[in-house]
Length: 146
Image (cartoon, rainbow, N blue to C red; front, top):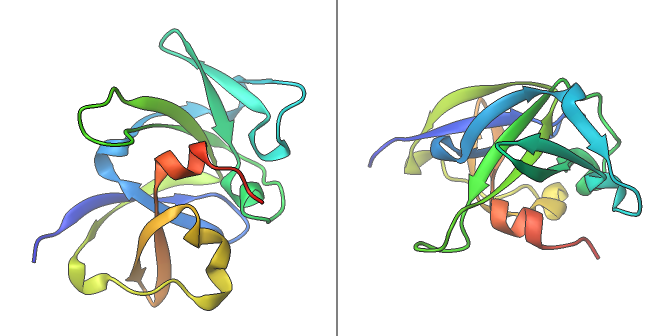
C-alpha cells in the first residue's frame, strides 16, 4: 500500500472534500471575483487567472447547502483523461486547505446522507472517523444538478 498526497478542502457549512495534491495550483483572495449575470447561483462568478477567466464554484451551494462566506479561492486543474489538455477552474473555500496523506486502507463508503456527493466524487476515505469524498473535478464542472 502506498500513501498519496491530498488536500482537504473546507467549503463551509460542514462541507469538506479532498482533491489530489497536484490538482491544487494556486490560492487567491476571495474578493478578486467578478459577478456574471444569468448564471447558476452556485457558479455566478469568474476570476482572472493567468490571462483566463475561470468559473468559480460554491460547492456547498452546488450540493444543496447554503451560501457560504468564502475567504479563499482555490485554482484547480483537471483532465477528462490523460493526453488531453488540462482545464482550470476555481472553488470557494472557507479556510485554507489542509494537506494530508491518504492510503488505500482509509477507503470507505459515502454515508447514505451524502447522496449529493455521488454525482461529483470518485471515492471516499476516512479521517478522524469522518468520511471525506474525493472530488472528480471534471464531473463537478461539467455536470449540472437535476
